[in-house]
Length: 182
Image (cartoon, rainbow, N blue to C red; front, side, top):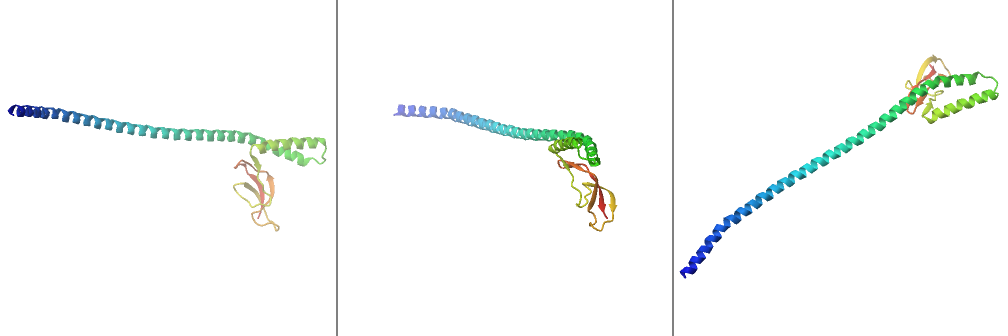
């Protein structure tokens, strides 16, 4: 029996000696798992950071793209405005010429057709005449040149247009010169 006990005792000692190695191996595995979890967490944070940066970059690009489009429209509008401003005195002269002719012959009709074509082209490009007669004076749209006593009209009503005013889209490019009731 002693031999059996000695063998059992030796086996037990060997098991005890092996267990610290197993425990140490388990601890190493736990440490490796923790390190992997930390690395995974860091990578996930990095992915989230990069995703946020990408979204911000996309938003910045869309804002840039919209700003460039708006700038293009503004440049085109200003270029059109300059050209139209140069043509307005010509329109005024056409109107004076048409008003001064007494007989309406072929020449008159030809000039009138040219005038109407120019007006159509300008209207298609956003030019609008400012309506005045019978309206209330608005300093944003009109430039009062004269004030006249009037029994027929209320104070501040436009009586006569001395020079037509025009708007390009929603911007006044030339206010109307008007006579206003006092």
